[in-house]
Amino acid sequence: MARLKRGWSDKGKDRSLEDIGGAISFNIWQISGQGVLDLENEGFQTDTHSQRLDVISEFAAYLLQVVDRMIFDSFDQTQRRNLITATGLHLAGIMQDNRQEANGEGGYGNEFLQLLNQRTGEYSSCRFDADDGPGFIFLRLLGDHVTASMGERDAKWITGYIIDSFGKQMYKNMQRILPGLIDPAQKERADIAPDRAKNYD
Image (cartoon, rainbow, N blue to C red; front, side, top):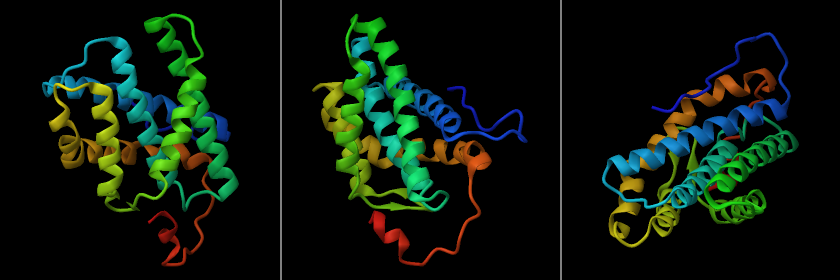
């Protein structure tokens, strides 16, 4: 099981959005890496470390969008954008280091940021519910992208597996740890109009 950071040891210390973004990115990376291991344990095949990083990239892009939805009512638009940007940049740094080990020198961090921007556009119209998490289309997109990264052998099974259980489990993992990470910078929640959530339908 991946080691996750669920909160801060010094609870009285102020944390910047940069600090929080770093902690969120650490957890996203851990959950994504564990996700690849779980797929392999279920019998789905990856052949190289580079291919595993392709799958991790898709899981990380998905989880970053999940985090963006989860903090929608906790921060104003500017804070939310800055936090997601900080998280994405931290993830790009981690990806750069790991890709260099697997593939040699290259601009892998920038490639990953381009992927994040592309997936942001794709996931932006997908439904997300505060209680139930990502909707069917959200999960199907994740499944399709992971399937494309995994190859043909297991193609007909992966998307269904992710829709049925795996994508939701990743959301639940993030649901457990995120509140403790954003607490130092979280504003008092205002009363939210009932139809505000429709922005993410």
